[in-house]
Length: 363
Image (cartoon, rainbow, N blue to C red; front, side):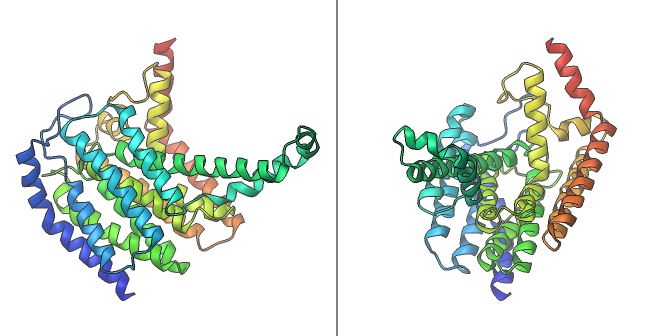
C-alpha cells in the first residue's frame, strides 16, 4: 500500500509543479492550439510533457524496471514524441498512425503483451476443417499456431492504437481527456487492487496522480492543454495497462471491465465514425461532431458539458468495479442495464436523430 500511495503522491505533486514550467516552454516554442473547426482558443498544447515526466519518475521510484515495464515506457515515449511533433508542426492523421503501430508492435514483441484469449477459439473454429487442410499438405498444428499468433497480434495492435486515438479524440474541452483518463486510471487501480495485481495497481496510481495534478491547470478555464503529446501518451499507457491486468482471459468479466472503463472514449469514437461515414466524409476529418460538441449545441455550458461526461464516465467505471466483484450472470445484467440507460440517454439528447440527418443529407 505504501508504494501505491507513494506512486500517486509523487506523480500528483510533480505534475502539479511542472505544468506551469511546461506552459512557459510551450509559449517559447510556439506550441499553441490553432483555431479550427473544433477549437477557438489559443493556449499552450504540450502539457503532456508534464504528465509524462511525473508518471515516469513516480514509476521509476516505486516499481522495479523489468522487460514488460520497459515495453510500456518505450512505447509511450514513441507516441509522446509523435504527439509532440504534431503539436509543434501538425502531421497528417495517417502519418501519425505509423509510429503508434510501431509502438504497439514493440510492446507486443519486446514486452510480450498479447490478447491471448483469441487463440483457443481460433483452434476450435478450424477443428472441423482439419482433414481438408491435411489433404492440402498443410501441417495443421503449425497452421493453427501461426494463424492464432497473427490474429492475436493484430487484435492487440488494434486495441492499443484504437484506445490511444479514442483518448485523443475526446480531448476537445478543457479538462475532459485528463478527467476521463483520471477516472479510468482510478477505476483500473481499484479493480487491480481488489484482484491482487500489484504492478498494475502501482502503474495506475502513478497515472491517476499525474492526470489529477495536471487537471489543476487544465480544468475550465484551462491555462494549458495536454495536446496530442499528452493525449496519445495517456491513451497508450491506459491501453497497455488494461492488457497487463485484464485482457488475458475469455471470461465475460475480464473482457467487460476494460471495455467499460474506456466506455466514454469508445462511445464517442464510434459516434464520430458513424456520423462522418453517414455524412460521406473521411473519418479523420476534424469537425464539431463529438459528443461534447453535441452537448454544448444542446445548450450546456463548457463546464457543464464536461461534468456531464465525467458523470457518464463515472457510471461506466462504477459498472466495471461492480462487475469485478460478481459472477458472469450479474455482469451480463449490469451490462444490459447500462446499455438500456445509454440508449435512453442517446435518444434524450437526439444522437440518433443526428445520425439520421447525416445519412439523409448524404443520400
